Image (cartoon, rainbow, N blue to C red):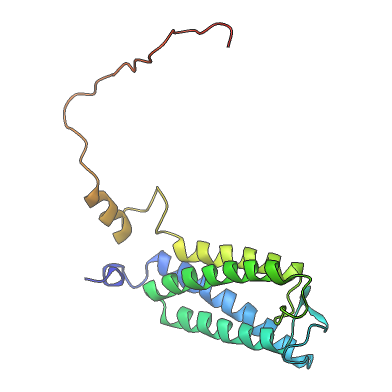
Length: 179
């Protein structure tokens, strides 16, 4: 049985996963279109800033493709959207590390990354990963999700009976002096 089959159609987690994918995808598509409207060279390392970040043709096309993937995930929804959010978020964090390695090296900086792009990649990646993990990895999951049911089935049941108090003994002197 699939986990998405266990969630009701109108469960609030589905809305969170779809919203994260949809909003992130729309932002990336708008950024890519505005970057292409500036007519940059495909692998140019010079150009105007769009929303405070540098871009070129390759980064604009990559942004449109990744935005379309996220919007498609939002349309499909369910666990697919959550898993897609996590994968895309991790890819953005990795692209932030790529950007750090090529800063100041125009020959290797084919996506025209600057520090603002690196910061955006890290922050956007973490936000999208958070959307994807929402309701899955918390210690206080709602009891109506299959993730809680799966975890609670794996945990050992607590012993039944009256509550007891246990004194924890610590080895060594009770109040060390001079430390």
